Image 1 (cartoon, rainbow, N blue to C red):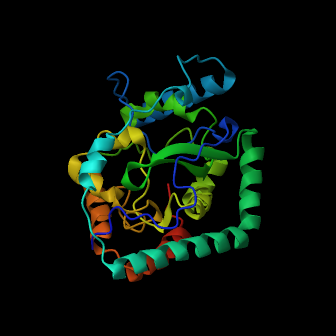
Image 2: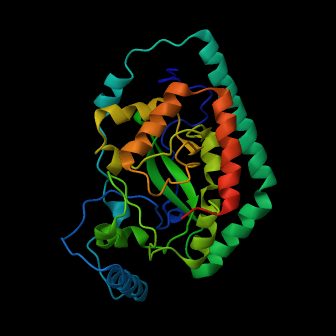
Image 3: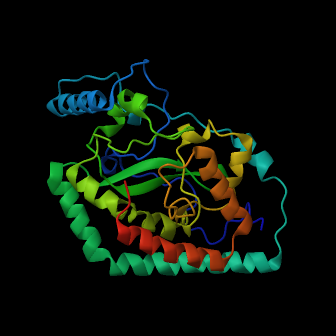
Length: 293
C-alpha cells in the first residue's frame, strides 16, 4: 500500500532545535569516510580505541574541530521531490493514517506518564556516571527528507563523535552505516540501557511532537542518506519509527544494509494498522530478551 507523502496531525513537524548543552556524544551509527588505511587485529584495535578514549578524557588528545561544528553532508531535496511528486491516497487510507497518528499521540503520552519514574532514574544514572549531559540530540532525516533532532539518553562518552573517525576502520556493517559491536566509547551505564533499548525512550517525545511514529523505519543520519541509492529513498514515504521490521529481526546485527532497506520498503508497501500492532507486540519480546547492542 502506497502511503507516501502523507503528513497528518504533526505538532512540530519541522526541525526541532535544542539547546547545545543537551547534546552529548553518542551515536550508534555514523557514515563519515574512514581516515587512513590502518588494519589492526581485533585485540589490537580494542587497545588502540581504549587508549584514544583515555587520551581524550585526560585532555591529551587535540582534534581539529568538534563534530558539532562540522556540517553534515546534506541529502538532495530534489531527489525526494522527484520520488514523492505524484500520489493519490484513497479516503480509507487517509482515515487509517489518521488513526495511526492518533494512536501515536495517545500511546506516547501514556508511555511518558507511566515510565516517568524509570526515565528519571535512567537520567540520574547517566548524569552520575560521568557528570556529562543526560540527553544526546542528533540531526536525523525523517518523512520526505525533512530533518529533525532525535533524542536519546546518552550512552557514550561525552566526546564520542570526535573519536568516531579513528574507529571507522573497525566498521562491522556494510553500506553507509557505522556499527561496531564492542564500541569502546560506550559507558558502563550505556551498555546496560542499550541492552534493553532504554536509551531510545526519549524518542517518545519525538513521537508526541510528530517527528516520528511508534512503528516505522529507523531514522537515518544525513551523512548516510547522501550515500543512498535512489531505490532506497522510498523508505522516507512514512514517518521514521521507534521500532520496525529490522528492530525485531533476530539477525539484525548481521543483516546487510541492502536487506535492511528491503525490510523498510516491505513495511511501506504492506503497511496496515494490524501490521503496526504485530510489530509492537514482537518488540516487547525483543526488548525483554535484552538483545540490544
